[in-house]
Length: 149
Length: 187
Image (cartoon, rainbow over the protein chains, first blue to last red):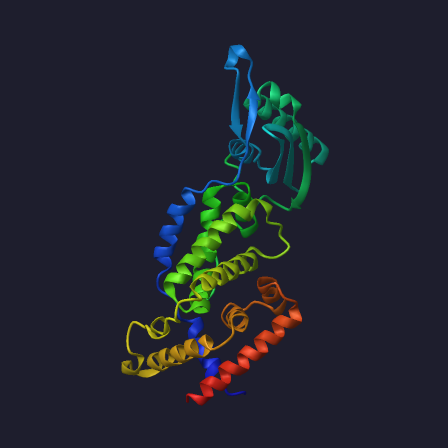
């Protein structure tokens, strides 16, 4: 059996040693992160004169809406990408993780319909101009997410 | 010292997926799981608690902003180590004009020579190790910590330090030799 060197024993001791201060760093970090929203773009919405006219909607709000709405027992969003041209949302790409056993074309078609519906609600007439792409990015044997259902 | 997650809690891929979609609670889970290791790494790399706190804070802010673009080419742990190493280097660069805070290196809660038994001996070893690490060039110190404390592979160390795997191996070998020589000399 090889005898441990002083450096080996010191490394082993350091692995067992914690550094004080993480709790304070963690608290400060939590406060800071709360004030730092993810990068987003304000995009145009047009609900018609009778429904409030034009306004702007943040892609952050759309991301949050899609993240929470597109989760079910059989699928969950993996990644959401928004393509904009100035203040116009021109495309949304939705990458999904699905579970084994689903009929993929049916599931993806259903998600496409749901995304289109959500964009129409959020952006009105502007939503109808958005190209929506839905792809299956990953397949898992069973869901590793909370569907909330 | 590893930071696993409790059985029954969401899997790492599920947490990353949710955080990448902008879920702040999921990102908080990542911070909780990986933050302590990033903090220890930064403290030992910089040799200063205040600078380490700044580096870790900046690292997680960068991670939060960059997460939507994170592709799982590396593990999130390796990715976080690489961001922490870069932010620590930024902090060190900003502090370069200031003298090295040797007090921080030896600023331990108690005088270990007064502590009896193995615990006291270990404290002495850790203090000597901190002093030996402080003599290493930056990248050797980072490579040593990533390998000896956090158990990263050569390839992962290369990813963290943005160098080829062979370079990571060389950095580690030189760092190990210097640390070992220093500690034998102080015996």
